[in-house]
Image 1 (cartoon, rainbow, N blue to C red):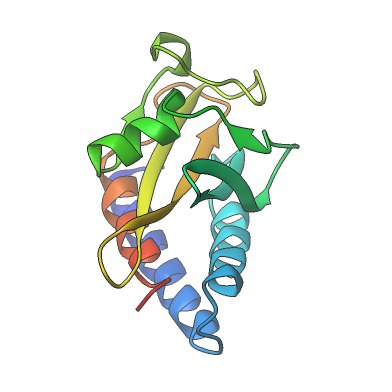
Image 2 (image 1 turned 90 degrees about the vertical axis):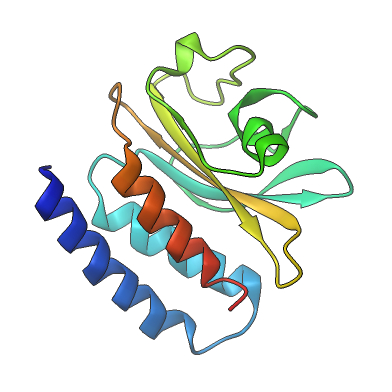
Length: 153
């Protein structure tokens, strides 16, 4: 998908998500809706979901795609890297990422966006995987960051 087309799609999808999630302030309801919309609007999203940070564990929450790891081992993998850095992590080739956790070996590239609550604490991550290498870029990062900010808005 070219840059302009991707930008336009994200704008339309973000508007749709905003209109849907306004109906509930519950973060899990919002995460579920965001997951479903994103997963079905972007054909390169192979696995889309949230892991919540609960008592120092990353536990699966709302997701679309193949069966996921229920709990991600502490301080390993891409999700924990995003939490540790406090920012989005884009991995063009998961096989080159040290400590990558392969819940589904068909995943080839990944983007992780930390989710912060109203006080600025990381409470979850949005994890999106693709079956092709180098699927995610700064356009994805920018728009997915804007979308996850809607959860606690």
